[in-house]
Image 1 (tube, each protein chain N blue to C red):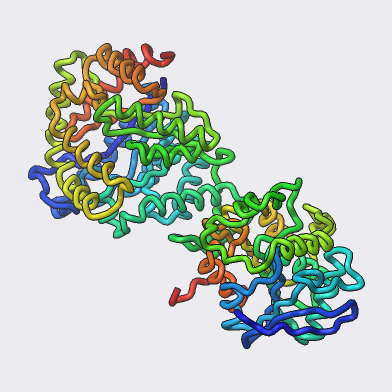
Image 2 (cartoon, rainbow over the protein chains, first blue to last red; image 1 turned 180 degrees about the horizontal axis):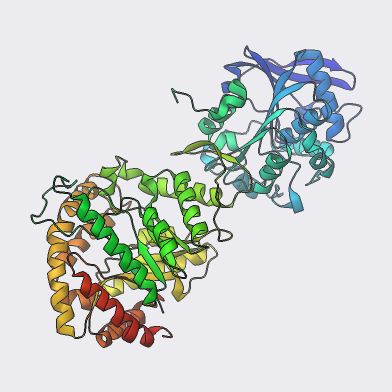
Amino acid sequence: MDLPIETVRLSGGPLSYQVVGEGRPVVAFHASGGPRAGALAQAVAAGHRLYMPVTPGFDGTPFHSHTGGMRPLAATMAEFLRTVVGARCDAMGQSFGGWLALWLAVDHPDLLDQMVLLCPAGLREGGKGGLPQDPAEVRRRLYAHPDRAPAEWRSADEMAANRRASAAHTGDVAFDADLAAALPSVKARTLVVMGTRDEVIPVETGLLLKRHIPLSHLTYVYDAAHAIDIDQPQRTTRIVRAFLDKGPAFIVKDAAA
Amino acid sequence: MKFSFFHLMPWTELEDAPTQYPVSNRDFDPVRAKELYDTYHGQMAYAEECGFDWVACNEHHFSPYGLNANCNLVGSAMAYRTKTAKIAMLGNLIPLLNPVRVAEEYAMIDCMSGGRLIAGFVRGIPHEYIAYNHDPNQSRDRLREAIQIIVKAWTETEPFGWEGEHYQFSSISIWPKPWQKPHPQMLMSASNEESAAFAGQYPTIIGMTLIADLKIAARTIDTFRESSRAHGHEITPDSVLTGHHTCIAETDEEAREHMREALKYFHKVLMRPQQDAQAIVVQGTRFFQDERLGQGFTKRLETLKARTLEDQIEAGSILCGSPETVVKQIKRINGELGNGRVNMTMKVGTMPDAVVRRGMELFRDRVLPELRNH
């Protein structure tokens, strides 16, 4: 999707975002690679008004004055939602973005009704999984089907800058113990989606989230690694749209399905 | 060595050879079926008394070949008729079934038997795909995906959904879960190199039937060993089960006479229609990914059917003779293949039930003592 980039001035600095579609609002938090409006975003935008903020520090955007961890970042995104979206909405976060969405749900429960976490980062017990430094190994861990990966439009320097931005927010922490302790307080109905071949986020993360988030669902996408929506776009889209569109009734099979 | 008593549960009353699959059921008699089930269940329960380590059966459809449309029903009966023998389901035809249902039923048998289930994950023989109207081309992929669902259903600690290629489930959380941890012992069929390589991906026992040539069987086991090693498992003799039609009698002559008669009905009546159907499926699809394996499968059936009893004994597909002869035959096969488990089908076709029982007792008294520590 080729969308214009808009900017809003928040208390800590400017924040860029894209918006597309009509319907109940959904805000999508990107992975540590940076924003990517792919097939999943298109599918969600076909039935929802989709907001895609660029996390401060990514893709050349400035860090905000109160950068320094995922909770301040969640506060920034809460301000974005109140300022730009202006209504309760649903959230969707992939990997790094899932971590961010979780803190948003913990600290700002008044903003979210539902949340989709696609192989979320931040809860890798014992440091299991993760992304290595070697680019070839990174690619192997991201994709079960590398032939389906889109061409990367960012330069190597831009990608490295995004990785640094991610580290600046997360502190390269594998397991966010404060977040884990706060999971039982999450009010948003949550769908956790994990790839059966994901070597970046261990299966234990999905089980932890399912166990401790009171209203939650865990779904495995078969034959998908960490870049779950790229390995299996149709399967990922089907389950995410069903959840966003039908809420708790998404577990009931459609007559037409 | 360890031994399994396997039952096909054949229908023994057909006078005319059926010409087509599925086989017409116009002459089916439920009263006779009740008698057969009683007899067959009795034989399986008796197998434990005769020292067999497993009692086993499998699943077939739309044919007098076996009255076992759902072997799990027999498995649940055996859970209560036996005390120590493993209940070997060899197995459910996984690609044809709802994998969640398989996970549930296997877990029930495992709990009812106190952890004695051997969980067979088999693709089935080609004609079964006609019975349940599934595309044979998808059989391997469906098996691969279904195994993952079943193992997850057994081992996951939280409800989960599944978005797959062939299966979608919104939320799975089976009750009961299996007795055995992390899950029941698995068994997969590996009668050719393709299936042996596939089985090696899992911590499983392999079952090999229709052995037409011991050297080819040995190569298949080598493939399984290599594939297992590549996936982090080291196989042992206990990892390999070979299956054989078996008749043990007082003398070689008596055993051979019984087996010859039984095989006539087995091949002419029980096997005939499904062999035709199998040939149609194998020729018209990619049930075997490697075309040569499909040709090989059809040829193997033809070869076994055309061979004399003596040829089949020599090839390793049949065990037949006095107890002492059968001991020698098993040792020879074990020497070639290194298998630690033997699966015996004693009720072959119309083999008289008294002969089956006597064979079981001869096994207990004169075969098992020679081989238990072999």
